[in-house]
Length: 149
Image (cartoon, rainbow, N blue to C red):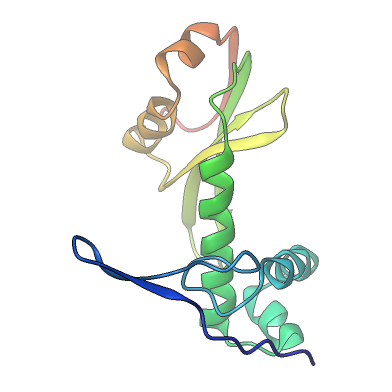
């Protein structure tokens, strides 16, 4: 086990108050380094559940969920509004009950563009609304295998 213990420099600003410098090894308010978070994502991808990944990593379920939230937020910040020619929308069930999400994907880029809870008309409209005007105008075809929504 490697433990880094360091006091982070702070600065006092009359306008904004006391600010702590964000270290280059970790994200803001994170207990973990960026390298460990990348490793945790690989463990999550290999496991069937968050609990299984948490057990392997020796962390609580909440800590692993916070890592996932931070990683997704960083990914969304970096994502560019690139042109999309072919999009697909579908519902995906998860859990043991009849819980569904609506998913919008870029079929050429093999990437998820947006996810909304439920499989309703409103959910379908909300994921399509996340495309910019330029992206919507560039769409050549939509593949949909959903209910009437």
